[in-house]
Length: 82
Image 1 (cartoon, rainbow, N blue to C red):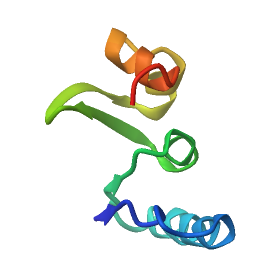
Image 2 (image 1 turned 90 degrees about the vertical axis):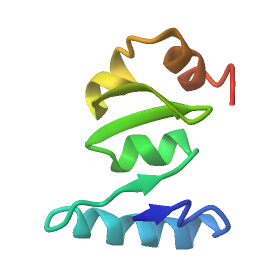
Image 3 (image 1 turned 180 degrees about the vertical axis):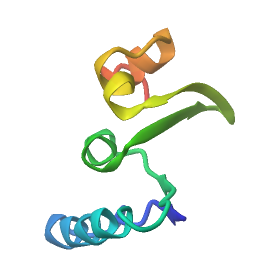
Image 4 (image 1 turned 90 degrees about the horizontal axis):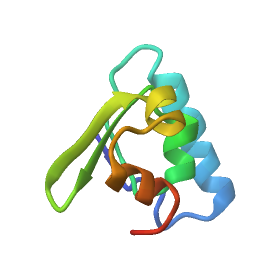
C-alpha cells in the first residue's frame, strides 16, 4: 500500500519511486493512493475513484481515463473539481 508516497518529493525523486513501483507491480499487487491524476495515468492498471468516502467509478485504467462513465469522474479528470 502506497498512500501519497511521492506527495512531498521533488519531481526527480518522485519519478524514481514511480520506477520502483512499476518494477514491483510486475510481481506484486500495488495499491496506490494518489490525488495526482498524471501519476495515476502513468502507473495504474485499474482505477477506483472515490469521492467523499464513496466509490464513484471502478474501471481498467484505459477505460477510466479514456471514457469515464460518471459525470463526477469526468469533472475530476477535467480538473473542474478537486
